[in-house]
Image 1 (cartoon, rainbow, N blue to C red):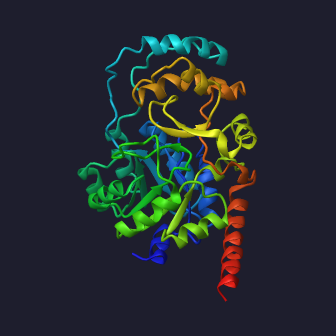
Image 2 (cartoon, rainbow, N blue to C red):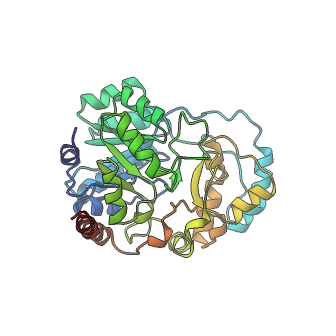
Image 3 (cartoon, one colour):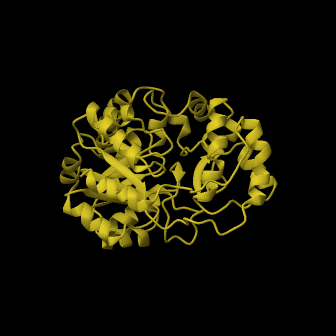
Amino acid sequence: MDSQHFLSRFGATLPIVQAPMAGGSNTPELVAACCNAGALGSLGVPYTEPDQIAKTIAAIRKLTNRPFNVNIFAPGWKEQLDVDPEKMLEFLRPLYSEAGAPEPKLPAKAMPRFEEQAELLILEKLPIVSFTMGLFPETVMQALKANGTFVIGTATTVDEALALEASGVDAIVAQGAEAGGHRGAFLSAHPESPIGTMALVPQIVDAVRVPVIASGGIMDGRGIVAALALGASAVQMGTAFLICRESGVSDAYKQAMLNAKEDQTLVTNSFSGRYARLIENGYVREMRRANMQPLPFPWQNAMTGPMRKAAEKKNNADLMAIYAGQGLRMLRPVTAAELIANLGHEMEQCVTSLCSHLR
């Protein structure tokens, strides 16, 4: 499948995918604005119950008639906690108090059930569904394909890309080390030491036949052109859209991103139990100082959730999980439409400049 055919399936006029980000950052307004501006908007709903997913999908459909992507996590997490949480509860108590959250306690469940989320996505007959952190079960993949749904998986290594292609995905996001948020690794022996985008993308492009979407550290038109030169059919950008006016993150979150520098992010499992790139803050340093081991994902994520939400309301960036990639100095606090228009112009300028060097 060539790049042009791939983009026509998405209904996009630019090779840009707004990354599906969970936790409320992907508002219906952000997703629709990206679609209406010529990119592919995405909704991340891995922590959302099916009834709320359906309401959000309906809200987006009222704002745009263009296709958009809905993303969940692949199954495989522990639905029952098999370790004693008391040590973590004790560690979190003073931090909960500082954040203004109630006494910490172990929730009844850590995440919505994958089977219920998948059933809803199948019933919605969505044009595009993406996933990360593993593989979809064959039955789910077959049901989506029967609906004509375009399915996208996430890989952090060539072996993961090959496994995704064998499972039947239509495209693969190649997630490089620079990317903010959770790592999509599911076969990697070292998820805490990911491979950079420039090295990963061409290796995956050479290994698979489906389109590859480059992700990680791409913030402007130069980055998009570089990814296309490496063989990618499109790029996926998350951090750049977090600062947009339609983003659902708080002003404190956005300001923390604007204040941070490119060397202040790190890959850690301290907030969720799964490795993710975020801005280092007081909570991360306190976990390190206390030599605390997080609970398994998604239980650690569920345990820190009330603290993170309360801290965001109090503008306490030290207790928030501020997921961000390494391109922080290139952030632009504009609307999604303005950002996408700028990216298009920058791509044209970059190509013109490159061509002048080749004459």
